[in-house]
Length: 68
Image 1 (tube, one colour):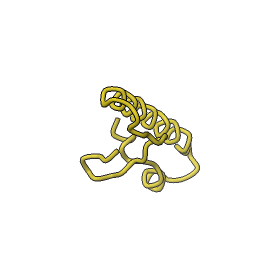
Image 2 (cartoon, one colour):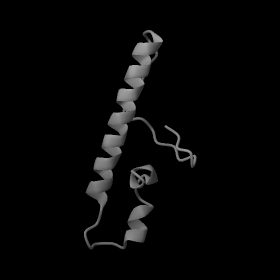
Image 3 (cartoon, one colour):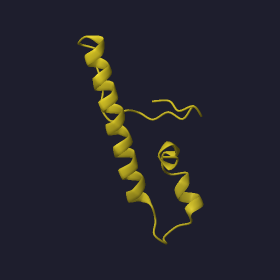
Image 4 (cartoon, helix red, strand yellow):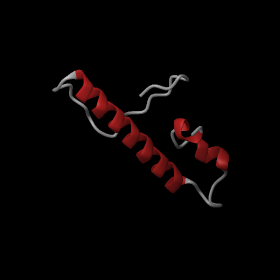
């Protein structure tokens, strides 16, 4: 996925276009939602309660998730 700010986020799973376009688009949508879920989960798990400054943490996680 590519954000309007040109940040690239790799999908959590690889998709192959082996079926009709509607099926592939449904799989793509599901994969995009799964990826956002995975990235959000990783972001929340990486959030430091008081271990490191927030400025440093922000640059370690996907910034797309920070705007949801």
